[in-house]
Structure formats: C-alpha cells, structure tokens
Length: 602
Image 1 (cartoon, helix red, strand yellow):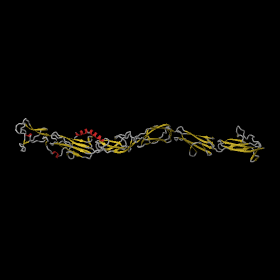
Image 2 (cartoon, rainbow, N blue to C red; image 1 turned 45 degrees about the horizontal axis):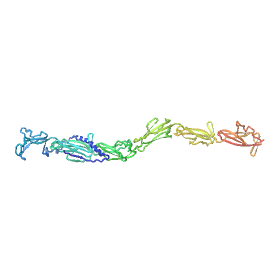
Image 3 (cartoon, rainbow, N blue to C red; image 1 turned 180 degrees about the vertical axis):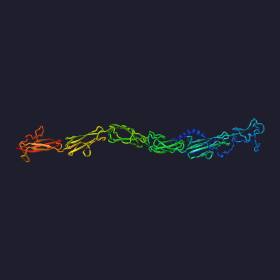
Image 4 (cartoon, rainbow, N blue to C red; image 1 turned 30 degrees about the vertical axis):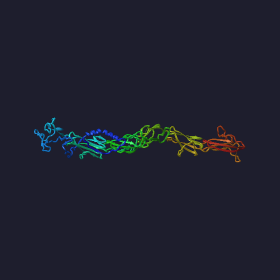
C-alpha cells in the first residue's frame, strides 16, 4: 500500500479557556464524518487522464520474477533454441485462430505447460515426475484508490464538507495483481500531479479534488472527485448594543453579538468579564445574579464549526441592577403622618430617576385607573375622602421598582371663619359700632386638612395674614373682609362686615331754669329755686347714659327710674356754692365728663 499526503498548511490561534480541548473533542466526534467522506465519490467529465500518462508498460515483472500482463491485450508466443537465436512463432495447428493472437482467459495466474519435466543433464524425465507450469499473471482490474482527509476539525452541513486547519489528504491504494504504479490528483481541474506534495494554501475557498490511479500493467481507475470547503478564516464578532443604543445591560438583558462567518458557520460565541472571577458563558445568556451593579470589561470571541477562533475583542459595559426611584408630589397638598391631603383641583405628579440606564415608564393605579402608564399630572376631582395610589417605575433594562403606596385624602370642603369682638360693640341695622379699644378676633375651623391661614383686609386693600386680635384706627366707617384657606388651598368665600369706629363720647348739654343774677370770683350766681336740666347728644353710636355727682357725693343716673332727676328736686340751697360733675357714655362706652360750678343766693 502506498500513501500520498497532500497537506493544507495554515495556522490557528491558541484560544484561551479550554478551546484546544474542545478541538480535540470535535476531532473525535468527526471521525464518522471522515469515514462517510471516504465513500463519497462523484464522477466528473474530466475522467480521461492526459495522453502522456496513458502511455505505460503493459507487462510488469515484480521483484519475485512474477510476470504480469494486461489481460485485455493480445499475447504472441515465440520460442528459440538458443538464448539469442532466431525466434519462431508458436501456434496451434488445430485451432490457429485461438493463438494468433492468444488471450488469457483467467484473472490471475495462467499457465503454459508441458506434461513432464526433463532433466537438462540426462535429458530424461525428472523424478519425481512433475508437470512444467510457466506462470503468466493476467491483470484486467484497475486499482482501488481512496482519499483520506485528515484535519484538525471537520464539519458537514447541507451535504457540504468543511475542513479546518492542518488539512492532510492521504491516498489509500490497493491492487489485486500487478500492484499500483501511481496515483494522480488535480485540484479544481488544474494540472494532474503525482508524488508527494505539500500544498500551501492561504485562501479559504471551495475546492474540487479529483483523482485516479494506474497499476503496473496500465489499468486505470475512473476519475473521481470530492468537493469540499477549506476554511481557515475565523469569524468576526461585534458586541451588539441594547435596543436603546448603549452598552448598559440589565440583570435579564441577554448578551447578543453580531457575528460574520463566511464559510463553515458559527459554532459558538463566548464571553467573560475581566473585572470579576467569572466562568465563560455562551451568547444569549444573561449576567449572573451574583454580580453587583457597576462597570465591567467584557471580553468575547467566536469559534466557527471547524474551530477557527478569532482574537478576543473587548468592550466596557455597565451592569445596571438598580431600579428607578419614584416620588409622588401634588400641588395644593399637605402631609399629616402617612396621609397626604389634596384638594379636588390638586394635580398629582409622579417623577422617577434612574442611576444609569434611564427610566422607561411609570405605571400607577388608583380609583378608576388600573395599571396605567403615567404621562402627565392627574387629579382626583371626582372623589372626596380617602383614596389610595400605587405606583412603580421600570428602567430601560427592565429593573422594576417595588410598588409604592400612598394614602390620599381628597379634601373638597372649604374652611369657615367667624369674627368676634373683644370689648364694646353695638349693632344697628347690620352695622357694628365699636370704640378704639375694641379688638376684632378671627377664628376659623376646617374639618379635614386643617386651616393653613386666615387673612383680612379693609375693603379696597390687599389681604394680610391674620395672626392675633387687632384694633381699627380709622374713625368712622370701616368695611372689613376676611376669609380662611386650608392646607390644600381650599379658599373660603370672602366674608365682610360693616364697622363703625366711634372714638368720641357724647356731647353734654345743660340748662338752668333761671338766668344768673350775678357773678362772684368768676362763679355765676343763680337765684334760689333755680333748677338744672341735663342732656347729651351723640351723632355716631348714640348716647347710652348720663350721670351726675353733686359736690363729690355719690353719682346719680340722670332720669333714672330709680332716682329723682336733679331738675325735679329743690337740691340747691341759698348761700352755697355747688359743683356738679356730669358724666355721659355712648353705646360703645365712649365717656364724656364735664363739671359745672355755680352759687345760689336769695
């Protein structure tokens, strides 16, 4: 048996992380494929070898002196009586047509014989008697030749055979009779070649390997061919960004790659993280749950189906494991414990922030709304009383916030304010008269969120915040407005009150029943029997009372049902000087005091 080797030399990088072991495993797994290939033959049009190859010997004597002749050729028998003497044709007289020429009838040994052997010395029968048999081996069968493809890796897909690095093609030959003289091969229908050959090829391509063999008596095999693809080109891998166009990955984001592989096809893509002790995983897997949020280096490479591996690529990625944080705010709101008070007109807003990937959406549920995507501020104007809002946010890489809950109380009621007077006041026809000492006190109440503030203003002026009881300073008419606002900006309708600030006491009026009869030391003198009449006038709140006191005696109310009016009694005696102190008050307790000094004479 003769073996010819045809070797495709190329190189393969040394892949880390156990790739060589994988190549060895793939080689064992592909042995059945090689066996199948060895029987996969294809007839081609170029089945006639070149003429120069066909011109060969048809008789062959091997090292054991066996004579082989092509069984399909004629044989002419001749003999001579001397080694170099004249030759004579040997024919059959009974059937000359069978020996002119002679054709051997049996594949393998044929015999030209005489009955008994003669001893060359004695010229007598040689003993023991033996028949003379002169062997002539007929050979009509072509050799058997099979190519054997040896490669570090083999792959079959859609009836196409792919070979990887270090491809060797060996011929296994056998011939039953004369033996194989030579084997010939041609690559892609180019020149026929024989002998040992090292074929150095730098191209990955599809090839057709044609071959035939000839034995020592010029029996040819039919030309056969095998097509295959020699693939030494590694894949090219690119890490795909997420659909948002970044290298930010979430816990459940599959790691995906774009791989260009032109020949045998992609077997696997592998990646690992450089900043952490991390086993190789295959494309499509997600990051291990044990990793922490943060930035990592991602190293990756791909291997094709004949174990060509590329140089590793690397990208910096960010593993985002932190969910967004959502906050709830509301206009016109007030927090008390875990409850948030809002008004029917309050706008409730949800805002989320995310540490890396960015917020994708916020969803919420409340009365009449179930798991809706938040898009703009909303209100609960249809509802009064207690409600609840649940909400959560998710980021672009699907980290989802734990759902939050907020108790909401919709306060649609307005507060109420009352005014009260501290000090003197008097009401006439819905107008309140007060004096300058009277204080105005505002008190308010709210059933739900509570009063935020109370304010008041003189009609026509700006409101100011109320903090404590106050007094008026402007004498005369004062119009006061007042109202309260609760903690969710429900504002009470403004109330008003008409006030009149009365700063002046009544004007005292007095008259004597007689004219004075003289004057002593500046004191008027009146005749005995003179009476004194008292009175008071008030053009604002009105006179309330008049009292008098004679010579520091006990004060007496003038015109009281329980007293005798000074004008009705003979109180003034002759020869005396009298001093009458008159005190009058109006309805808001403004006081006027006046003293009268006079003398009575007969």
